[in-house]
Length: 293
Image (tube, rainbow, N blue to C red; front, side, top):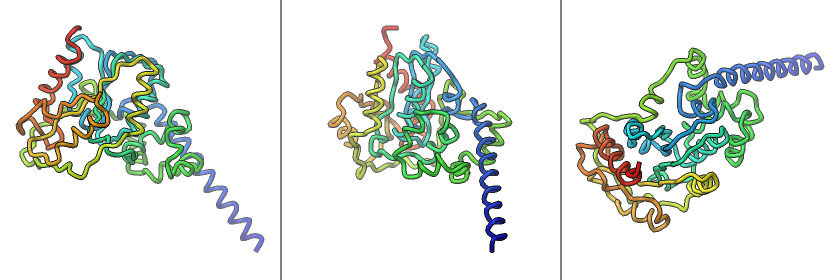
């Protein structure tokens, strides 16, 4: 019995050692990355200065044409992340401030994403390689159900989020294989999709007094950043469109641009404008908020 116990302990110790080594190796690779996505682009940076930073979900990523800001003489970048929630948006802003970014204006897409306070597993996982390297990231995740395991068990996070940060992504990161996510100053243009579903139903969607939106407001106030919160357009055939009025009932300071671009020819899907629509919308934003430049 004693030899068996000794053998078992040795196997467990070896397995633990392998996990520690793998954890160190994967993390080391991600610590050298800055061209795969917007999270590593921010994490592995220091002291950038912007006139305009754009934050939000895909409805920011696909709707604000950053080169149009640049042509107006504004140093800008679109940090909107498709699939992201305000949970990740708040964390990304915290990370920028931890990295000593100087930001004059934040344009925040705050509309459909106000309806939940949950994390987006797909996007949140991209922060996981850095959880031991940033107090801001660790603190932001500390209330999440899987925090203890992700933080204290070596390599656990790389196993659980294998599709996002597992071997394939680590390998591409080690090769420094770029993506298109950072092209066009972060703006991701969409084309016209002839098979798109141009219908949407927001009837059951309810905006919240959202914890993470409140965090973003507080961070901007604390760091003298001018916050411009906006709701972006939807396609013509959207049910429950009074959702946007419900948002203003809670947050009257959020500018409602739901009808700023009308006509399905400007949309790639019901909730996302194509490049032509995005340019039309961005021109309106520039005119309304940056005419004095």
